[in-house]
Image (tube, rainbow, N blue to C red; front, top):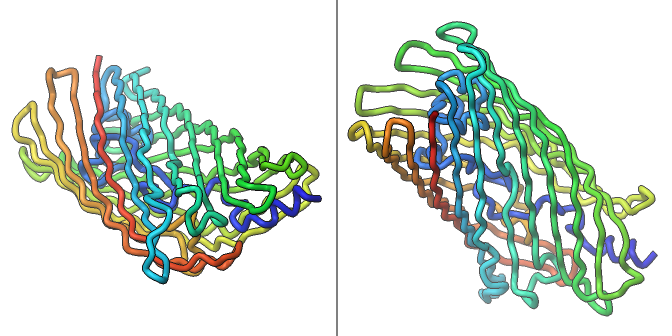
Length: 400
């Protein structure tokens, strides 16, 4: 009984996966899947098919690669989220922390018109952590999510103009959530994990020798996280279960080689966050402990980019994007102080040889200040957030 009372007191108990309000993409998605794409703010992601990272962005793009290729990237993502109360008093410190997100891709030719690819990445994640005694410790202290996604894929070149691709996603997810529960309970911590399957597919069409368009889809994935709650009071500890569905995405991209020196690209990505209406937490018997409304909405991300080829070894990239937040103002929480964001990105590539390339990219995300009025658990948390994100990425690509 005490376990149920403890869980009910957590207004965000069901938010085990909704834990990165300063994630690089809106909500808690991670679009950082290549350093080459970051320099263009991921414009043209489903059409560029520049390297093996197309396994994630559009598997049909593998048809543009020859032989075998491996691409390995690492991304340093530093969100900042600073809370100021309605009385003008800062509290909690900077809830953002540096996260390092790696990913890797491999593509090989099985037949001239058939390619196999494998991706290893993290499509959702990041971490926020407040000072233990901050004004909103009853709402949140630490929030963390980590995902590992294994994505085998195939592409088939139908003809000179059309290529198709599809893949499976096997995904592991783990989460940790803590907040102060008061009295003998102290700080309570929920942890949980699950594994689930999804899929993706894409189409790439060459309009002519210099222009191509792409469409890519990544499915929603449903999880049942099984975990535990731990407090300072052993009688309050027990098991917990959370059902949650992460969103699908549709991406529509274009790429155009303007001349020998310039490429331009664009992308529109729709993310189906509206499936995230509520988060239901159950105990070990399946009885409902809490049912927290979220009422998230679908989002739109629009990006434009350009690449300048200085010579055969060097190129420079730039990009701009606008990324809507799925979080309605009325449902913003300390775990998810998310808001609309504007991306400004730069990058470059150096080719030491015909078979290798080194990419670097940097982006700054300007996030609109957000208000919060979270009445429960008491005392209410009322104030504003000032947030931003910085991303620095590097990638090595080798063809053989």
